[in-house]
Every structure is written in C-alpha cells, then in structure tokens.
Length: 251
Image (cartoon, rainbow, N blue to C red):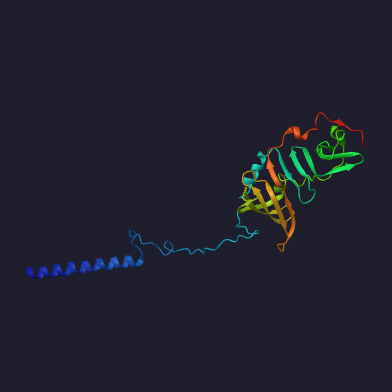
C-alpha cells in the first residue's frame, strides 16, 4: 500500500513540472515575458550615410561663403592709404577721408599754369594744382597755386569700398606679392552685379592690392591694381595747400 502511494506522488510531481515548462514556453512565444531586454530590430538598425566630397565651385551652397568677412572688416582700422595707378592715369594718390593728394605722372602745363600736384576736396568739389618740381617750374611757378580741373580720380575705384560690393566671398589660400615682400590672401567673389573675380587682399587689413574680374569663359574682363598700396601713412599736412603759396589769378 505504501509503495502505491509513493508511485502516485511521483507521477503527480512529474506532471506538474511538465505543465510549468509548457507554460513558460508559451509565454516566451507570445512575448509575455517582459523582463528580458532583447533589443528590437528597430533599435539595432544601422542608418547608412554616404560620404561625398563637397562641391567647391563658386556657386556651391557648401562653400564657406563668409570666411573672408572677418578679415575684410579689418579695413575699418585704415584711416588713410596711398597707391599708384599705373594702368589708367599713371598718377599716384594719397587719400584720407574726403581729401586726396594727386602726384601727377606727367606735369601739366596749360594756360600759363604749370603743376605736378593736385589737391582734391571731394566734399567741396574743389581742385587746386601747384608745382614742386625744380626741374620744370621756375621760382615764380613754385610760389603759386591754381584752380584746376582734374577728373583722374575715380571715387568708385577705392580699395576700401570695392569689397563692400562683394555679396559672395571666400578665402582660397595665401600667396605673396612683390617678390615675397607682402603676404596676401586670395579671395574669390561674386559682386552685386553678378561679376565673378579673384582678389589679393592684405593679410591684416583685408584691403585688396589687386582685383581681377573674369568673363564666364575665364578670360579677364578687367584688372584693377593698387600698386605700392600702403596704409595709415598720409599726414594731414600733405593734403593742405602749403602756406607759402598764393592763389594765382590765372584762369
């Protein structure tokens, strides 16, 4: 009798274990076990990215178009500048504010007026000429100044103002001018008229020494050079008529 009871207990316990295993398997199958942190397919999905070389053409939106602005803004530190124009007038200009001193590439002798220096006041619209060259002016001519006409100075051809017309601009690298005496940055630009070009600007003041405008086929449309450009060297005295001179009555 005792053996029969023990046998029944063994059969009962075996059935219970099998039943528990079946329940566990079904829960796993139905996703009812929530304490297993198995990552989902969505959480382990890898997003593929294509790495491409950026388009560095002038019209590309990926080009750092504003990386020249900070350097060009240093032009605000320039109070005066001087340069020679060897392409058009052959004259040299010293500029400070609204006043300009012009050293003529060739003296002018007209209507008894002989002069090689012209002083312009752009606000007043005046121009006065006088002579400082002992080789071409006698003592009488060196003692007077005249009202003259001079149209060689182009206010729009101003190295401080031209960069303001560049609506798109970026630095492309640096180089040297005048036998490596001056380090400059090269700037590609598109101006407010849609013209494309390349400029070489001072590596501190951001003012251009040379500007080249190009046609769509790459040929040069126009070149502007500010030869011997220097900054903050013009004295006020240079822009005033010497006190020893008298105004001539020649017209």
